[in-house]
Amino acid sequence: MTRFKSTKWSLLILAIAGVVAIIGCAAPGVDVTAPTVESTAPVASEVGVLIDSVITVTFDEAMDAATITADNITLAAGLVAVPGAVSYDVESMTATFTPTDNLVNGTEYTGTVTVGVLDVAGNALASPHTWSFTTGSLADTTRPTVTLTVPADEDTDVAVNENITATFSEAMNAATITVASFTVEAGSAVAGTVSYDAPSKTATFDPDSDLASGGVHTATITTVAADAAGNTLLVAKVWTFTTVTAPAQGPAPVLLGAAGNYAILAESAVDGAAGIDVITGNIGLSPAALTFVTGFVLTAHEVTPGVIDYAEAPEVVGGGKIYAADMTGGSTSSDLTTAVADKLTAYNDAAGRADDGPGGYDYFLNVGAGTIGAVTLTPGLHTWTSALNITGDITFSGGPNDVWILQVAGTLDLAAGFDVLLDGGALPENIFWQVSGVTTLLAGAHFEGIILCASDIVLITGATMNGRALTAFQTVLQAATITQPAP
Image 1: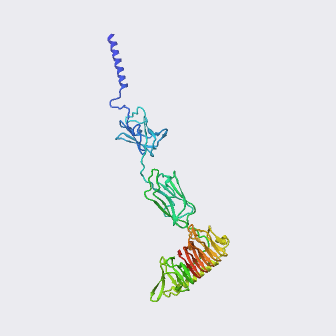
Image 2: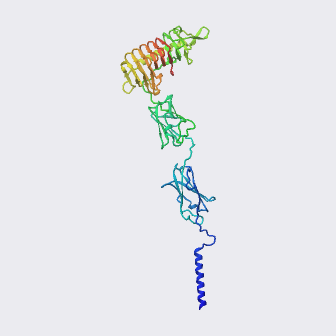
């Protein structure tokens, strides 16, 4: 009886020991060890971390790549999650978190590895792993570029009221985007204002007035323009565009015919100031002879001995020549006869223009009662039934195809020191002054346009003129300058 009880207790003890062994021990070769984070980069509490850094987590054993995801490895600045992509390298047992954008300077970030990551045996971290670091800055050495312009380079038919814009590859320092660094020119500088929009990284040039129609414009952004880090454009950005050609305003132009071949065309005399006058273009005199061209240092040229074809003078520049009715070489005499006849035809055409009525060109009668100054003249027919005195600067405002005809029934005087100015692309060859009396440009005055005069044309000391002096009598120059425009 005693032996039986002893045996029963022995068997019970052995059974309990077996159960404990089964419960407390895994099968041989099965991994039940929880993985751990061996290292991180940046390390915990690191400061001055570059803002373009990626974040890495290295484990102490091989991990299940399917659990290395953006849900289980995260980065946040306070409560704000940082978007990014997560990858895993099997060989180094390292997970990498790559932020979508650069981190923010001087900001504390917290990285977290959740218990959702598992090793290849399916064991999870014993607890989440968290650590923090603080960013410093990344030195920006990349130069900005202009990625888009409106209008585009070599664009045509651009609206005259359009703004000019340039979009940059990165954020710019607005203080460097000014009228000094962003300019537009069309022969001369275009006045305007410049602004910069940070969200779109776009600079805008807003002209003060409409651009000149039908003109080539050049836009430039200089190397003064700099990004937020101080990097400037490597080279200036330069592009061109052409504005749309607007329909011509004003009356039809006066056709000069052969008279358009001369800067000065007179019938009785041309009197200059030796060594002082400057004439760009040809001088013609008919029916008077060469002896009535005075005040110039003349050199006659003969193609055939004894036959003069033309004369030259140091006062006549730009390849210009002097022709008179008694020059028998070639066709000089007949050419002059034609030119004088065409001049008279042009004068009569200009004098005969009248108010075109509704739907025609604009008509202006006796502006300023015959005395004008500080006024702007728009394209059209301008008539004065008596003398015209210009006692201040006046401006012709219009496009390069617009036309002005000015009829003056008496004398025309431009007061000393005042200017006739052009704006908006207006051209002197499209401004026709038909004057019945003497035309006088006083000392230091500046004039624009074609003078068709039935009497003398006189330019006093220092007077300048872009145009043509075409007269039925004489032209008198006193240290004056005349530059002929296009035919």
